[in-house]
Length: 206
Image 1 (cartoon, rainbow, N blue to C red):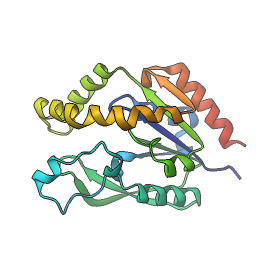
Image 2: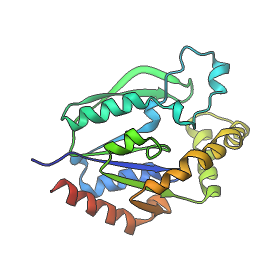
Image 3: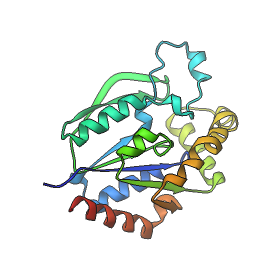
Image 4: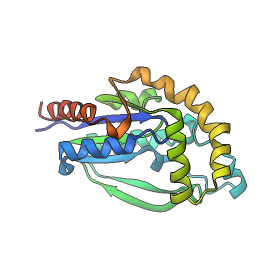
C-alpha cells in the first residue's frame, strides 16, 4: 500500500507557493494529490467588529488555527476525508461553508508560515521554501489584492509596511532554515519543480 506523503511549501507573500504546488501536482498526477492552503485556516474573526478585523495582524503565527490544521493532517494521514473551511478575505471571517477534501497519497500544504510551526513541521515528510525578490512579491500582492480582494493600493501598501514586511522578517524568512530544498523564482523554476516532483514520486512509491 502506498504511503501518504505530506509536503509543506512555505515562503513570503506572493512568492509563488501556490504555483509551485499546482505544478508539482500536475507532474505527480492530480488524482494522487490534494492541496491545502494555510490561508483557509485563518482564525474566524466573526465575533470582532469590522474595524477590529481590519486592524488584525494576519501575518503572525497566532493568526492561524494550527490546531485545526494538525487535526486535518492527522485525519488525512489516517485515510479520512476532511472539511476544509472556506475563508472570506473580504469579511475576514469564515463563510460557514466547507470543501470536502478526500484522502490522497500526496498532501501539499502551502502557506507563509507552514515551516514556522514545529508541530506542523513534524507532520511533514518534505519541507520546501519558495524564495522571490521582495519587490516582485509586493508588486504581485498589489495586483492580487486590488483585483481579487477589492482592496485599495493604499491599504495594501499600509498593511505591507505595518505587518507583512515586519512579520516576514521575524517569522517567515527565518523558517527557511528548516527547508529541505529552497526554490528561487517560484513557479518559473521548472528544473527545481521537476526535481521536487521526482523526489515526491519516489517517496510515494516506497
